[in-house]
Structures are given as C-alpha cells and as structure tokens.
Image (cartoon, rainbow, N blue to C red):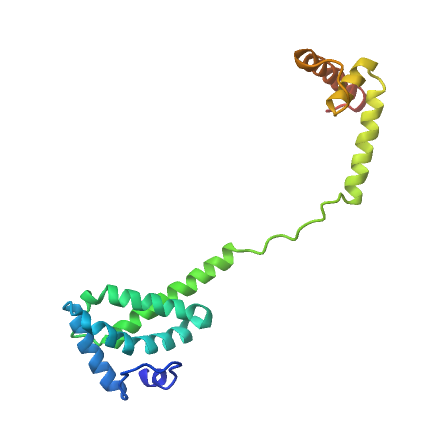
Length: 194
C-alpha cells in the first residue's frame, strides 16, 4: 500500500528515504524516540509521515477535506506519540489514525449538507394578485362599517391611523378604546366575525 502512495507525492520532502522499507524502519525508530520524549525525532518523523498521510487522506476524503484530515491526523499522531507501542508498525498505526480522521471529516461534511439546506427563494415583497384582492375587499368592508359609525368615532380611528389629533394622552386613548369597541360591534353585526 505504501508503494502506491510513494510514487504520488506532490511535494518533495528533504531527507525522505528512497525505499519504503527503510522509511518504515526509520519511522518505527523515530516514533519510539518520540514516545520516550525525544523531541529531536519530530522533524524527521514529520518528513516521513506528511507526504504519505497527505496522499492517503486526499484519496480517502477527497480534495476538499483531504488536507484538513491529514493535518488533523498529524496533530493526533504527535499528540498521542506517548501511546505508541514500538512493537507495532508505525505506518499502520499512523494510517489508522489518518483513516479515522478522514472518516470524521467525511461525516462532518455529510452533516453540514443535511443542515445547510439552500435557503428558500426570496419572494417578491410586492403583494400578489390574490393578496391585492383580499386587501381591496377588506378595505371596502372596513369603509362600509366606518360609514355606520358616528363622525367622532371615524375621526378618532382616522387619528389613530396617523391623521390629526384634537386631543392627546388619556383622553385620546379612551376615545380610541370606545371607537374600536363600536367598530367591532358594527363589524360583527355586518360580517359575523372579527
């Protein structure tokens, strides 16, 4: 499996061994040193792991999530370097972590697709013909009911809608309450509901 990855490295990396078997043996030694706390093994381990994990992640998770999955995998590998068992194959251990990160990245993408539905199309803010007909009928019905009220009630309702006010404060609020009450009674008498 490593030989397929080996020939497809996109970026040259310094000090990369020419033979995969040499890289595997060197990586095992480097990971054992990292597990023991030797920080000088970090750079050569990175030089061996990055191209292989990047190529693996790009094929497994795709070009969109592959880079991120490879970076997450490297972070996990180096964060968990102390857990590495030197009796295990270092590449298999690293690829297992990378596969898990790729799987996680793919699932996150799937969840985002489910949650991120396309917004509904913006509707025209202007009323359609049906709304215009309803509005026209309601205005005509309201005008007919207003025609049955006293002129003082019509004047109060017009002032409430933005017209000139003869009185202010509590007096106006009381007149509005009474005028709206009479309007509702007249509406019910004529149309049967509010």
